[in-house]
Amino acid sequence: MAEVALREVEDADLDALFEQMRDPESVRMAAFTARDPNDRAAFDAHIARLRSDPDLSFLAVTLDGQLAGTVGSFELEGDTEVTYWINRSLWGQGVASRALALLLERITVRPIHARAASDNLASLKVLHRAGFVTTGTDTGYANARQAEIEETILRLN
Image 1 (cartoon, one colour):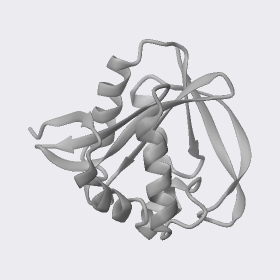
Image 2 (cartoon, one colour; image 1 turned 30 degrees about the horizontal axis):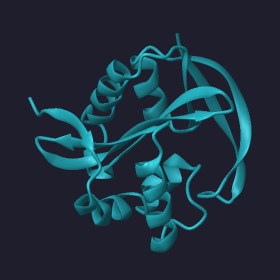
Image 3 (tube, one colour; image 1 turned 120 degrees about the horizontal axis):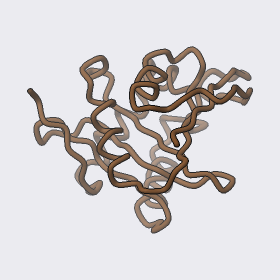
């Protein structure tokens, strides 16, 4: 079985992460993304902020030692939320589920929250498998779709 692990994001990861986070299908599924996923300067500034903020977690996900994506946690309006982004070539292989489980072992605060586009059934499945329960929905502007869409709000106690 392939080994999923978490580690600090390294400078050498940035080119691959930029490519992952601008993949058109990944961007469409994530929906709530950067205004312009192809803007490398904005990407670099965003990642630099994430890497330097001691109040959030931003980690590389590896699969058998190779970069597979990112996972992290941050505070939004007083709630701790989780997020993840896995290379599309690895979707459906349990990488997101394992990465999220590893992150949840590191984060001791509860409750913890998550959000996903309501039509992103695979991501919702990952969150439900991790023990998150749906607490409601909201509507927000999704840059990737240039439209208001529904997102599902989840919580893990």
